[in-house]
Image (cartoon, rainbow, N blue to C red; front, top):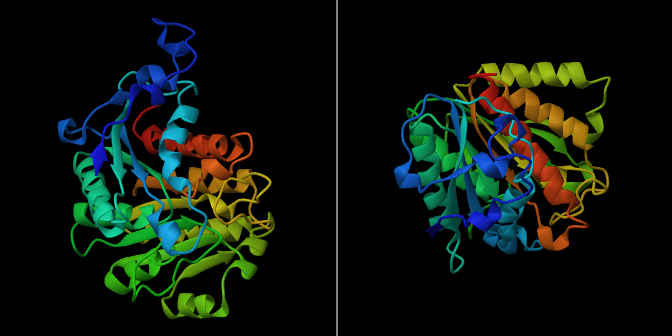
Length: 321
């Protein structure tokens, strides 16, 4: 269920082989097995892919997000290297969901995330369907004291609070976490009025979910929303950031399982990523629901890669220029 990334995922334009100020990401990323990773001093970030859309299939969505991790790597490859000489980005490979064994794959992903965090390496997970988030969470929880307060910030059009009595899916993760972990809280931005049933709104209220509707995310409300988000983050020991690309307006991100005609613009999402990944208690980020098979001209993949790089820059910027 675990494999290393092929070097062909990291290739691109080369402007210089000696002048590091002209380097691009593919010239600096180090591919390394997770068991060979050494303890860091917060100057490293680790990328792990989750090749899975079993949760999307179970949720009756359009599959294809399993091909996103490698597509995102290829889109990242030629972006300019923006870090200092002491900083490093590691690619620790992919966790694969085989034979529909979602729960096992999520546990495997959790193990990789735990290893990175325990070695003081900032963690970025490339999903996969949004079921990626549950594996990400398992790793965060395992790396922390049992009573540590986890604040989950989700940028998403959907609550993902469906029942999981029969089986978990890409629509159940946050309910699983909130019902199983008394020390976890949930703040979601971008909720669509027309993308969630009344039952889901009722469940969100029952579980004390903090949420902001997409149509309330206006320039006039921005200062208040950002203050609420800041207070939420300040009140938790660890902040986990997850992005579901279907939160974006379908004009920006057509390559998703459930496009949103009334979704957010890319600048709004970028601003949230900047704010959350700049917080000192944020050490991990995942991106989910990029579906290359449904994309138009690679727009969603490229935008997703830029969001990943934004997160990487802010996660590492706290520890050096």
